[in-house]
Amino acid sequence: MAPQIPIPEKQWAQVADKVGGPVQYRQIAVPKPGADEVLVNIKYSGVCHTDLHAMKGDWPLDVKMPLVGGHEGAGVVVARGQLVTDVEIGDHVGIKWINGSCLSCDFCESANEPLCQKAILSGYTVDGTFQQYCIGKAAHVTPIPKNVPLDQIAPILCAGVTVYKALKESKAAPGQAVAIVGAGGGLGSLAQQYAKAMGLQIIAVDAGNEKRELCMKMGAKIRGRSQAATSSRCQSRRSNPRRSHHDFYGNV
Image (cartoon, rainbow, N blue to C red; front, side, top):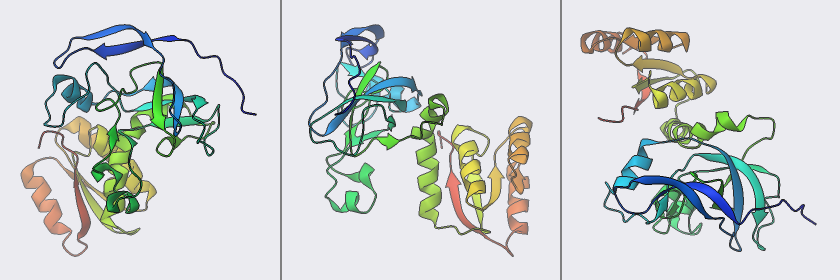
């Protein structure tokens, strides 16, 4: 029999009642998981610029209102639906942007769930992780080892997933080079860490001495300081061309 964890009827959450806000910190009801869902006690949640776009209604896809934003939540499973068998009470899990999908279309079956026409989006089409207790589809929550600090995991559930997917799709092999544009930013610095762990050579492209120093510390082989410098350095690598190019500038 699964252990029972006390669950309150009310919780605190950040709620936008209408498109454009404002966002209010107030009490709302704790949701109950459906048959294929789990209820997660959120311990930490990252904040993404997408959360602002959702609240402001910047995108053509209709956004749920009232809305609890957030899609970078790490926490502990406290309840599960009757059909859930592979997630246990007490498990540490993450809730990501893709809260759920159909699991049976061509996109889902080829590991492209974000393109699923029935995808459910955390903090956009369903309430997200800016609350103490959040619902997630059991098939889509990410297992987290219990010896890994949850505060370090939260941003990985968006930025980390984004850059890892890009590097994986590039099919770059150990020893090959990848160019990372915006290498000194949030996404870019994570991309450098993943690339290094995958045995890839890093061509870091960014501006400013502070970011250059960060890229050097992370082991980048080439650092772009200006358009001219970057062009010159890339020309010098033509004998060992890059396998892929990854742009992590958010405003390009």
